[in-house]
Image 1 (tube, one colour):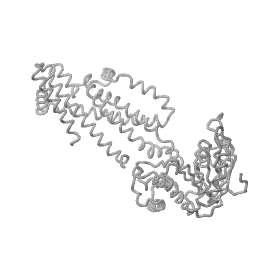
Image 2 (cartoon, one colour; image 1 turned 180 degrees about the vertical axis):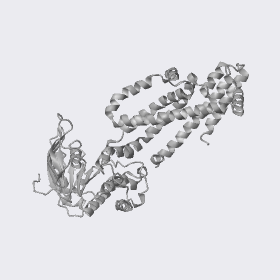
Image 3 (cartoon, one colour; image 1 turned 45 degrees about the vertical axis):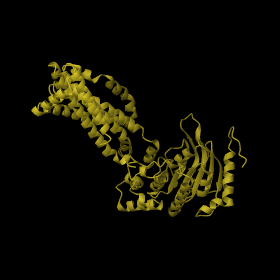
Image 4 (spheres, chains in turn cyan, brown; image 1 turned 90 degrees about the vertical axis):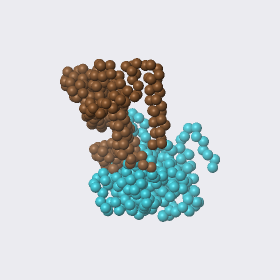
Amino acid sequence: MSTEPESGYVTIEQARYRYSAAGPAIVDGVDWQIPRGEVHCLIGRSGCGKTTLLKLAAGLLLPTEGAIRVGGEALVGPSPRAGFVFQSPTLLDWLTALDNVLLPISLKRRPTTTDREAALDLLSRVGLANFAARRPGELSGGQQSRVAVARALIGGPDLLLLDEPFAALDALTREELQDDLLRLCALNGTTALFVTHDINEAVYLADKVAVMAAGRITHARRIELPRPRHRDMRYAPSFAAACRELRDAMDGEPAVGRERPAA
Amino acid sequence: MSARLPSLLLLAALIAGWEAWCQLGGLSPLVLPPPSAVLATLWSEIATGRLWPHLATTAAEMALGLAIGTVVGLGTGILLAEVPALGRLLHPYVLASQLVPKLALGPLFIIWFGFGMTPTVVITALICFFPLMENTLTGLTEIDPARRELFRMLGASRLQTLLRLKLPAALPVIMAGLRVAVVLALVGAVVGEFIGGRIGLGASIIAAQSVMDSSLIFALFVVITALGMLLYEAVRALERRVLHRFSKG
């Protein structure tokens, strides 16, 4: 496990979370730091507590013990500096793609022409310049996910939190969206915490990957691939080695009745 | 139109069969008047203008009852959904109030409100209230939790969440409740008139029954059915208009 001293923009200190006082800890004493502008990925099997940890980082849940700080301030509720991308696109079916992107603004004030231009710019950056007037029902799953990413970025958040947002997409669309996301994060120096169960995705996106099991972080690895990332890196030996190490770390979890694969 | 053609042909066949049965079966017109007699009676009711005040009264009672029941049902549904403690407290009572046969309350309403339109409007409103309340409550409490979290994340107020997320998302379910309420409103208005009405289609049926005028009763059935279908189609049109943005694509 990495113990290098880092000045975290996001600091998770001994965070514990229980749904009920007597229940098991879903997140069990996690310490983690994300320096400003870095992309960190959290991988683990279903039910390991990674989504709960992400919701703690968002302020959607408050830790039973410990603290979460964003920019030095302890969270006491949903963080206004954070954008959240959910597992499903969670678009509002009755709004156009453009109005969906503008939702975070329109909940606060009437969107201005500048806001509209910013939203259209974001839509064109995710390849949806011609789809602004469409409703979610008229968009494919990948396009809906792109709108959801654009919506999370509209307020210019310092922190982007993503909960397996591309899990339901086909492999090619997923790779395209990963590139879009990295480009957009790099553009604004956005800090990101990305939850996924896909090791390849984690290695491709992250500066650092944490493996989670049973509510704890069991392994962490810095990814030394250069930025910007591009498609060819997926076939580099160092990429494969990182994937292999993380896979081994996931298999190394104390799991009953689960055999370690030979490959 | 071509989709409705088989339905219309079936209607024509049924009417022809009914006419033939009356003519050839030697059935007393008192028991079952032939369609030709029903149509003649209907025409004379229309032509002499006797029908219009009754039709207007029933339509007004229905519209008023529906409007009051809808507004109160929608409001109660929102209140019970937004304040779960209140919902748990009051829902059994609301349910119990609906299990009381409302028509049995008619005589009581006549004591309270006198004869005329008021008791019928109250009965109609009571009948329309329930599907609206129940559907509003169901629609509002079945909002996708992820979307609710999204609104929390975006710092939306409770009112914003209600107006911008919950109500639009629940609208298809609420509109389905309104469609049920329209049908029930007609039943409420007509049967309410049975009890306390002097004017209205329901009151006319009672009056026709007292003089054993079966063909007038049938003519009134036709008018009531037409009124119901008209209002149902009006609500359907409203529903299509409102839900246009949902169904697109």
